Length: 296
Image 1 (spheres, rainbow, N blue to C red):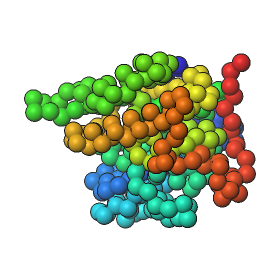
Image 2 (cartoon, one colour; image 1 turned 45 degrees about the horizontal axis):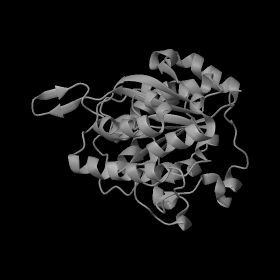
Image 3 (cartoon, helix red, strand yellow; image 1 turned 120 degrees about the vertical axis):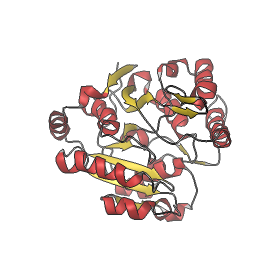
């Protein structure tokens, strides 16, 4: 599996030129639920650098799960297109969860490359976008790029600079080691910062909850091989640390997604089907613009 550093893509004028020469468009989706403390600064930072100053992004969208605070208003004031997930494909019904937002993003966003950044980042920087988009612009054989970083954990005894990622180390990495050893090379498989080609995302099912990133990796690996997946070092990410109860619920959703991908298992009823199986999507996107080139 190829690994990069965000510095490899920090020459934004050159990266934008390469994007335009390749005829690619790039969308950023920020999935949100009650992120009024961070969303405005995230949108302002990314928009200033990657839309206004360097035109890497062709679209910057906040897809919201029904926030009860000022998330949507603040995101719109900061310059994002803001839409509620329930208003996308409304005839498909309303489900809650991060995966639901991401699935709806594949339908709503128009880019050949779709990048995702979580809405709770406290130290936002454009590297969280160009670090994962850059490899897809420059390497046609890649289809899915994850970010990784140090995640400080606030504890009673102080700050543990590497204490974040508890679910990864306790649950996901042991599962990958036993059942999907190729994927153990990923430093942070649950990272919320990643980018993928539309042609990859439209062809895989999406768990509606927190199992979505685990499911993505397994499905992309099986469909395209480990050579289609890469990762980029994004240095450090600061965000709110979740409670053990939250992590327990997250772990349960990850287990559901994982077990449904074991041999002879069937997909959970909570999963959304591949987007390209919907006639409405095929009408909106008659052909995927940038298929992954599988190595011989």
